[in-house]
Image (tube, rainbow, N blue to C red; front, side):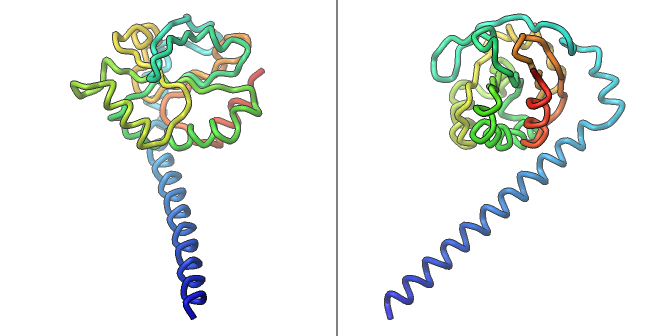
Length: 197
């Protein structure tokens, strides 16, 4: 009798896990859709089209410390397709985008010769212990792609992301192929990366 109860409890637990994952995925997708809708107006595209770097340009190289204490240069990734993302922990669209970036990184990046470099605009974080805030965010979202800390605004001032998230899709030759203002989902990332050389 106890084996039967244990088996039923195990089945109930597994069903609960499946339901929680379905709810989480649905919530993630609705959050990204809502965040995308905020940025899809024609007016926003016209306002920001002239700001920062443009498609077809070679982005300036930079060196920033990673959250893990390594010095990383953009040029370290020449020969790879790079998703260069500018973000902050307090940004709701960034929060909506991060689970999609992590899933892309885990499931598709390696097979598509792609890398994600997430530049946290640390100088713009709204807390005194900025590094700790970024570490907490990384742990909460279970992120394992490189997170760089722009503590002095060096990359931010060069790339001028007027709104965040802003992402530059850089091809294997080091040329910006697409600039995305606002959040992306996993499907968009996969499509844009597959379109690049």
